[in-house]
Image (cartoon, rainbow, N blue to C red; front, side, top):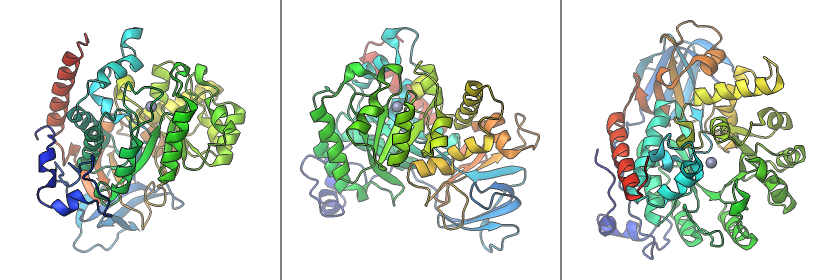
Length: 483
Ligand SMILES: [Zn+2]
C-alpha cells in the first residue's frame, strides 16, 4: 500500500455537504478541513458470523475458565460461550490446542514515535527526551501516519486489541488526523488523546480551538465508536520539573478538556525529581474519576490514598520506566488501595517492542523481587491487569475486557503447540511467563479478524515496516541525526 497522502483540495469533493459540515452541523470549513476521516486506506475484514470451536477459554469474568468451549460471535458481539454451541451457518475456527482470552488492553503509548524504535541512545544527547524532541519537530503528517500505523500493526501482531494513542506531537490538524487515520485503518479499538507538539513552548497552551473542533466533529472520526477522544494533558510539567508549565496554561488546558467532557491523561511523579506532582494536583483538587495518571512510580502513600479516593486510574509501563532509569513500579501498593490499574507500552523508542506478554512477565518479576516473595504477584492477577482491569482503568469494561456474552468481540487465540509453549500447564502462568507475540494465532477486534493463522489480515506487515523504515531514514537525514 502507498504511504498516506493528504489532499486538502480533494477534501470537499464527493460529499461536499458532509465534508464541510460535521455530522452534527458544526462548520469545519474554517481551518479544520476534514481531510481524511471519510477516506479509509485499508479494507478491513467484514464482521461476520464466526464460532471458535473447542478451545480453552479464559473468560476473565466470574465464569472463570472453560475447557473445550466454543465462543460464538455475530456482528461484532459475543452471543454465546459454552460447550458444543449450536451455531448453524457460522464460519468455524478450530480452537483445539489453543487458549482464547480477551484481547490485551494497552493503556498509554506514544505510537507516533514508533519511527524511532530502539533509538534512545547511550549518552544524553541521544537520550529519549532529546531524540524525541529533535526528531519529533521534523515530523510530517505522513510520518505520523506511518509511525502510528507501524505501532498499530505491531499491536495486532502482539495480541493487543485496545491502544491508547497518547499523541504529543500535534504540529497541525493534519498531524492529528494522520494519527487518527492510522488507528482507523488498523481496525483497533483505541483512545486518541490530543496533546501538545514536541517543542511546544511551556507558556503556550495547546491548540484548544482545534481540539474543540475535533471533539465537535468526532462522529466523523469515531469509526462506529471504536475510536474515542481524550486529552493528553501536559499537567504541570511532565516528568521533568525543568519543563514546568505555568499555572495559567495548565489550568486553561485542563479546564478546556473537562468542559468538553474528555477523559484526561497525564504523566506524573514518574521520576524522583517529580515525586511531588501528584501531591500538587491533589492539593489543587484536580484529581478525578476522569483522570489517568501515568507512571506514578514516586507516588507517596498519601498520594496513593488520594488517587484511590478520587477514582482516578493509573497506567504503568514497567519496561520504559526501568529502561529510562525512572524507578520501580508500585503496582502492589496501587492494587492494595483499590486503584484501577492498566499496563502500557509507552514508547518503543525505549522498550524496543510492544510485547504485552513481556510487560506482564516483567511486572510480576519486579513486584516479586521488590518484596522478596515468590508469591507476591500471581500470574492471573497480572493477566487481569492486561485484560479486564486494564479495560476498567480505561472506562471500557462494560464493552470489552472479558469473554462475556453481550460484550463486543475483542478476543485473541494463542496457540499452545509452539515450541516455546508446548506443555499445557496452568494457562495463566503459560501466558505470563512463556507466551510471546508470535504465539498469537488469531486476533479479533469488534468481530473483525485482524490476524489469522499468525498473519495480519488487513496489513501487509513487511510493507508497513518497509514504508516506516524509509520514512524514519528520511526523517533522520532531514534532522542531520547521526544515528
Ligand atoms: Zn508516556
